[in-house]
Picture 1 (cartoon, rainbow, N blue to C red):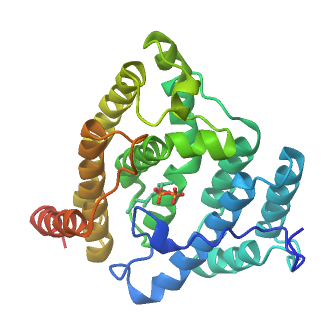
Picture 2 (cartoon, rainbow, N blue to C red):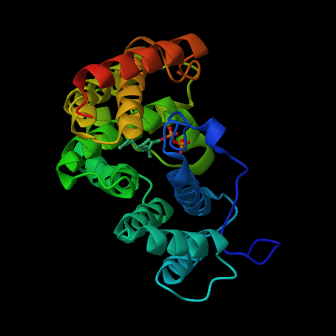
Picture 3 (tube, rainbow, N blue to C red):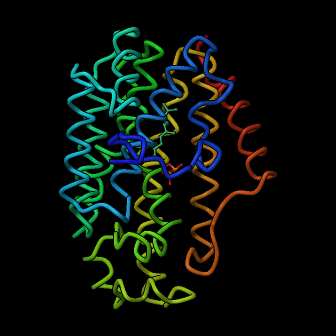
Length: 283
Ligand SMILES: CC(C)=CCC/C(C)=C/CC/C(C)=C/COP(=O)(O)OP(=O)(O)O
């Protein structure tokens, strides 16, 4: 347990450390606190899964406890899950998205290697797609938007894995890069310790970038299907950010330096996203 008696874990990482602005001003004011509640729930569960001072068994116990509280158990030791339950009930949203996230974090607690792209996509279905689906449900959007949203979220998750590939291996011994690609490209996880990508690892990174492009392509359909103006603009901005980050990962080496967007690139992506969302929007 944490010193304050809770099973949840807080790394101190805040929404400002995220690539993507899930709680932004574009979200309608009455919904913003629910997005923050969701963010805090997900962040706490993620921090349990990534903790370096807990055994896998203890992580699973805590995540199970968060699930129980989400299902209605008394939850003084899991306040983020307790708040999430109240928020979901208030908004009449299916708790499945939160349970799927907990499944992803349970997987993180026990699975440290990914055999192929299919395994990675299955992981993204649990770790990333529920974020988009939750936001869409919160705004009362049609479930027809889910395929494009799932593709966007999977792309964002893979981008995040590529940005953090060295850190994830060195800090938490987790490698999301498909092992079959690394073997075929004549590289291996030990190459993630190097200060720069070897030619073999670069080939694998190139494959991952290439496999992510069609996901971003599919995600371009999302804004046009979203009725809420703010969420439509937000999703268009996020698609634009994903496109730019993918371009960066194509050219830059995530082992040599953190591949991220500067303020100018973010502003350009935001402007382009908003512009496109108004061109393609319906309301
Ligand atoms: C409908 C709609 C707008 C959908 C988009 C929803 C969205 C922002 C999904 C994010 C998915 C995800 C796990 C990304 C990693 O983020 P990160 O790089 O910030 O992760 P980290 O901080 O945990 O490393």
